[in-house]
Image (cartoon, rainbow, N blue to C red; front, side, top):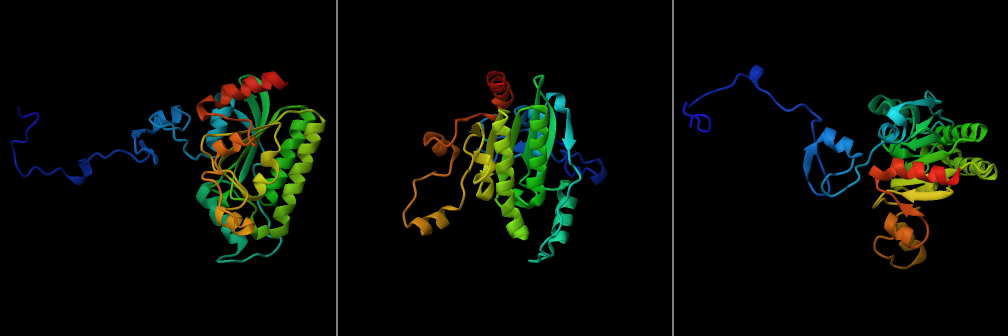
Length: 280
């Protein structure tokens, strides 16, 4: 039984002959700790095959899920933030954006594109939390506004995928102006009767929640997404009352009428297709 028992002692494998699993081959669920192949996790729309935990993903993954054959035309892809306030905290704002661009490969916290979903035309704007916490600055507002303009001009349904920590403090008032700007553009979209679907993902907070994220013809969410404006401590101190458990979860918001429905990511594309067929 030499196959199963080492009969020789002192066998040493040279370093150059050692074989290790390549990085990224396996995925470990942070919720249930199940380990699976990364490819299987990707094929399952980046959800756990065991407990259905929805892994936080970015625009590249959402575009892959939504667009047919991951084929799309990106809009305004080279737009980057200016520094209108000459803002400095632990580092200058331009230095922070350059470092984030280098680290993530993203130009800002939102990407916009148009393509097809099961043969239907669609415009998608998707936020990336990796870029300064998905914060909303002038570039985010401008790119979303231009994507809405394209949807309006071509009468194409608009999908917004929100994932944000709120307004970008480095741009102060310029950031807050994007709330009004995007809301005004969406009003034009509604007036023209061009469908707008808002998908809120984990987390969607701050000025994003207070503006375009909650203005959809349909407001939908992924399971267990954190959705709110301010943090629980700030709200508790403001109103002087304790808050219900889980009051900022997607399930709580749906129960109280703030969301139309919750959709599993694996069902997102067929659900959107059915919805667009219904309202077009």
